[in-house]
Amino acid sequence: MLTFFNLHRDQQRPRLQELLDYYLTNNKGINQRPGRDEPYADYRIAHAFVKNGTDFIRGYIGGNEITFRDEQYADEIQHINDINDAHVVNVEILEDCIIYGRAYEIVYRNTDNQDIFKRLDPKNVFVIYSNDIEVEPIAAVRYRSEKTNGKDVTLIDFYTADYRAYFYVDDNRLRERADMPQELNMHHMLQIHEYNANRFRQGVFENVLDLIDAYDYAESDTANYMTDLNDAMLKIEGHLDLDIEEARKMRKSRIILAKTKPDASGRIGNANVDYIYKQYDVAGVEAYKKRIQKDIHKFTNTPDLSDEHFGGVQSGEAMKYKLFGLEQLRSTIERQLTKGFKRRFAIIQSVRNHLNDHVDFTNMRIEFKPNIPQSLAEYADIFIKLGGRVSQETLLSWLPNIENPKEELEKVKQEEQESSSANDYQDAMKEDMNDVELE
Image 1: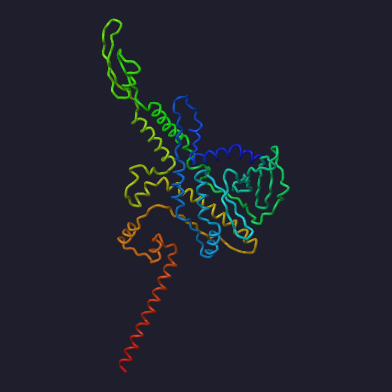
Image 2: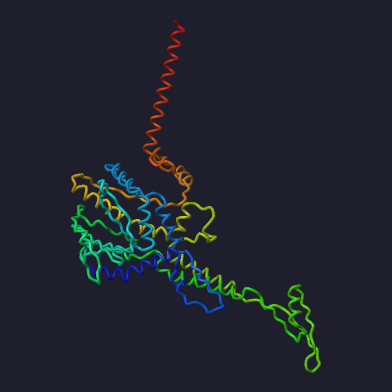
């Protein structure tokens, strides 16, 4: 286990930290660039491509709450999700998958015998897998540094399907903690499990860090150039009859009197005064930066919302074609998340069944709904033109403020019954009045 720990700490953790730094706009390339000598400007402009792209993908996939459906255990699943504030945890897991290409979660029972799941920091956790054809997780490690007696100590929690053990690292040796004895794992499954964004466990923006660096360099170089040559330089040609005091007066009055004086041969030449302006290839530099920006969006399948061809009023179908690349990314991430969510509930099911609180979540369906503007009027118009019919429940499901169409239909039915009863009462009263008048 110590070998795995050293590999993760020395190789994986620095890589994961770099990915987080780019999300936080602490871009390594521009920040570690060699400095410029005085008195030249040394701007280091970092751009939030990773943060903006991550937030967009996270909102697109997880903006609408992920739905867990199971007719038999719907209430139980909802109760578990409510206790854990599941939507928040799910979005955090999704965000880690986008940034790091992986995410980790621990499932356990608290002192109130509630099933709890929490997101773990990917920089401090790794899972060990078997070498079998059917690869299975066999152990997990969570480590962290703490101060003990004024000394930094690395603590390691080791998880298997059977037990949990606790260690600390001393002089590159693994030693058991006397204060934390080994414990049996009541879940009978590995409590820590891994989510992957793809089978290579790559962050969405990991392949474009060099492009982001190139864009940072271009913007910083432009800012440095503009600062170093911020003002035009005055150029004076000729043999001027001008002393320092007169030059100061001219500068103050903003008037230049170009009066020449005779040279050594007695000739009086001409004088010329003008400004030297900086030369800047605006079109070339802007085209270069635009090409880099376009490549970043292309290679990450994220749309450039500043592109004039992307905006405007468009149909939902037209928008889907423009988001085709993002749709493929969404499909991949959702498949991986679904596997992880099912494993989450499999762990909960395992501990419940061993405690004789039998549940079966194997038929649970997990549904994602992309957070994209939709023109329901457009769909309804097409459907009506084709001569189709839909149930009231389906119509209600299209409305954004109706979370439970079945419940809404029950309310409508109840209101109709109450209205019908009131009408029957009024009719009965009218009949009684008529009978009284006849008598």
